[in-house]
Length: 146
Image 1 (cartoon, rainbow, N blue to C red):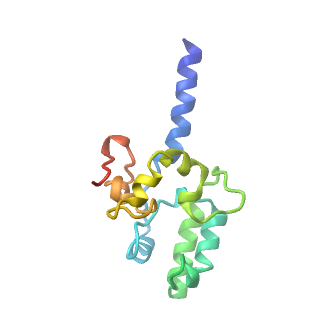
Image 2 (cartoon, rainbow, N blue to C red):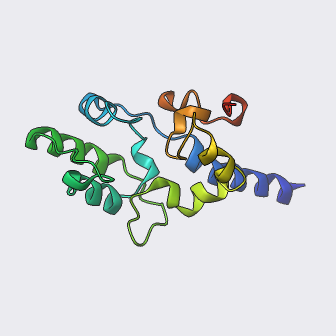
């Protein structure tokens, strides 16, 4: 019985790393990044990936998302302080949807979600995780649009 409880506790703690993310708390980050898409929780990526994103904002997923220098520095500092240091991302992949943990969690939905005009892309977290902006990815609150 002890082994089962210990195993369940370990699995729950690993699961929690991806689904109980710290909330986004930086106003500059929320306002600047959140003006185009959900301000993703900083713990979705490691420091290397966030740095790669922030130093290439002029080519941010085929869009020029350049910021004033002071805002860029403020956001970069916030992301560095709150990035996920335990995330396995050796190539500093910047696309959250290409990370192994994300692909594992969404593998059954990818084709269905991307074909849905209300979702379009798996990076549109809010389409299904309606409380993602409030740090709630609980499967009880998932709604796949029809």
